[in-house]
Amino acid sequence: AQSVTQPDIHITVSEGASLELRCNYSYGATPYLFWYVQSPGQGLQLLLKYFSGDTLVQGIKGFEAEFKRSQSSFNLRKPSVHWSDAAEYFCAVGAPTSGTYKYIFGTGTRLKVLA
Amino acid sequence: DTEVTQTPKHLVMGMTNKKSLKCEQHMGHRAMYWYKQKAKKPPELMFVYSYEKLSINESVPSRFSPECPNSSLLNLHLHALQPEDSALYLCASSQEGGGASNTEAFFGQGTRLTVV
Image (cartoon, rainbow over all chains, first blue to last red; front, side, top):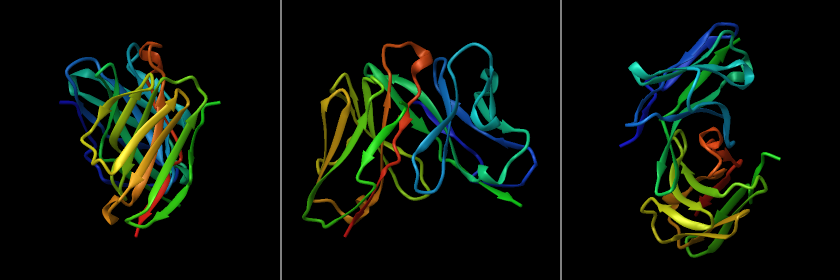
């Protein structure tokens, strides 16, 4: 069965520091992978996605992620964090199911940014 | 327009009430989803409609009844809910048949439901 693991429940970084959020997936075929961000009480916004090709993908707000098949990972990075990046981050896998797609989310990582 | 619009934003209902949540998108997407999200938890899939037909029901209790009147609209009818059903209900849509490059789901802002 498909699953997504985000090992870090909380991460705290200082503003201007670099960031890496970890994501590991379990899926039999080539996965479609996504990172979403959610501010409190809001919906989810797509940061970036991977479905094939270049394993380093660029997203919005200066985020990037690298797909590593050998490690079943899709870690999210940002070189310099801004206070506005404080939010919940979800990694997700899109799995074809019953003629459509099922989006399965990891448990999320809550990012706190110190001024 | 990359928006998924959900109404209402907030809803308080009693356990004997009947209410409906509404979701609308005008991106031409043919797949629409309902997710339930409890506080500090990830979204959990409830239902998926593909080309206006229910394709996935994740064993959701019958007090939740989805409806897809047309390709742009998705409703979630609520009846006899329990306090533990209080949560953020998220609607999403995605394009199907467009190849892997179009598989991302677009989410609405959600309806915050409180059952009293």
